[in-house]
Figure 1 (cartoon, rainbow, N blue to C red):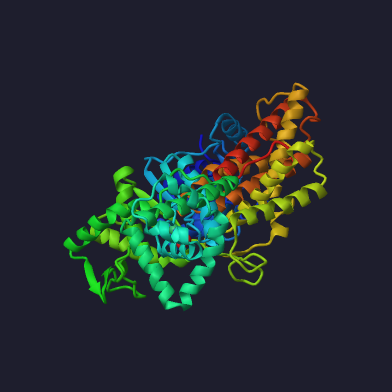
Figure 2: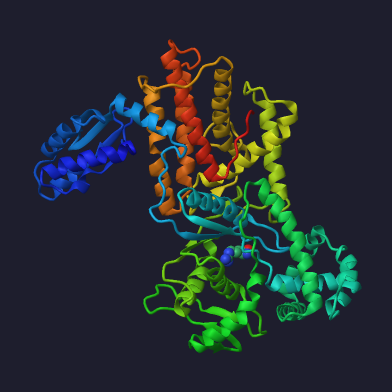
Length: 590
Ligand code: ARG
């Protein structure tokens, strides 16, 4: 048995086929009017449009055929020719039993597993994280987990930004501040004895120096030129510069990994732009041999525009006039690199929508050069998280956001809310901090994931942190309620048993459970984790109604109690899977 919707679709398809009409008219969707029906089929209207006869007559025959199916309780014609379908209690019970027994809660696997890279997060050395990185991390993590759960072989790569102009800026800024460091940069053979100098520079210093240096470079051309030369020197392998650079990358990475981990974001690969540096010179030579590289006022570019472009596609800047590799150059070389160690069949770049042109250019250059097969590179863009002013979210001080500050902020709000809410749970005081952190992170992540990724949304911590409404804390609370119910059941020796469906709330809950497989498949196709977030909410809300309407431990008889316990357990299992895919952890109690 598979999802009810597809089972019904097959039955309706067979009914159309029996009338000599195309079987795909039998497509069944969730009902627009859940009060009247569970599912509906609109095929008779389409059939009538193509001249098969009056729609209500066709619908009547389809309804009659459907009514004979064991899946169906009633099938009725409505309006101009819709067929409204109510599933039989027996079919619901059978489906619930199937889901209860399935550790994947009905989730199918892809037919052929692919090797997939998810390029997401994209943090940089020194340059602080901004909301683009936050969304990339949250959405990318969910997409990575989804693809993996459905059976692909997936590697998530942070694509650490450690090789650009910002490195040159930092090198000169640190050197200007401390003559020992300036000397170190010019030292042609730095060694262990010089480590002590490096210890003078911590993350705080980078955070302090970088914004100032970046601002100065904008207005001071001489300073900018020095930074450009420092960047070129670094990329040319100057020993002292590399020595210092490695330190920058190390301290940044340690802090970032820790903060990402708190957010439930863990990269499989932490490769940097710098890792592909050795591939760049041969790649440039190869592009030249292939006739793709052209001179453009001292720089070398690849033109990727096509005649039918509606907007002019910018060329790929491969080598700047100073001889530096650019952002697109490392991206192109990364495509080659990934081929050597993983040979991905699909590469998803979960990056801010504002970089759409960049990726269009890089992908076209890769296809032109034969570095990837057409269509195997995909930009999965997203909108911004805005402040109440409608602009990309900034901290109160007006600066870009620091991941750590954001985490502290959401955890603080969750502590406040948890302390104020009386959730009736037995949360031990020593678990309070850790639980608040989980609740805060869930609030943040769910608020992001519930929006279709292309949509921008407003950061509203008050609303995100509520225990009511479509929020992470609401979901966690429902999950924790089921856990507590199951613990109590175990204490009194109540065990789950065969599922029977009688109450309307049991029907609703089972219909929600049934939809999971289809939701995952669609989320996968559309790279749209919001569908899973929406499903998790529907499931939690259905559980809440069920729990209100159908006493479990106080059920009228032992069979009903066992059945309802089984439904509760199946709900928890599916909610856990859905939240696991979204990268949201559930506490034991709250
Ligand atoms: N580091 C980049 C930035 O801060 C994002 C990297 C995205 N990934 C990529 N392959 N270009 O904008």
